[in-house]
Image (tube, rainbow, N blue to C red; front, side, top):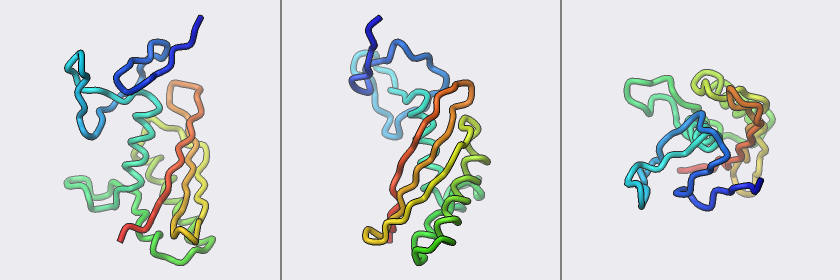
Length: 142
């Protein structure tokens, strides 16, 4: 059987069953179906985790405890304590606010020349055996 690859966000992937889905944040509309385009499975959970990490506590109305509160570490000196703090905050936010992911490992690698941390998160999707890796870069914003 030939494998079917997802060419773009509008082409559905026929071989993959839909377990989880979320909307794109810009609410794209499918050009033919005129429905909202959705992210499915791994992509939906990756986007959710990235949003949780980049959200500070007290940023969301009516959910003051939601968020990773990572920005406070980005302005600290590069040290093993800062690295451990980032990893700990990411673990806590994923375990507390993302029930679709079962965390395997979180690694924060400092890049002092770019004033950034590269964060690699490995997790399993609940109800699947697929290990998923999310890599994102945390920069100082201000």
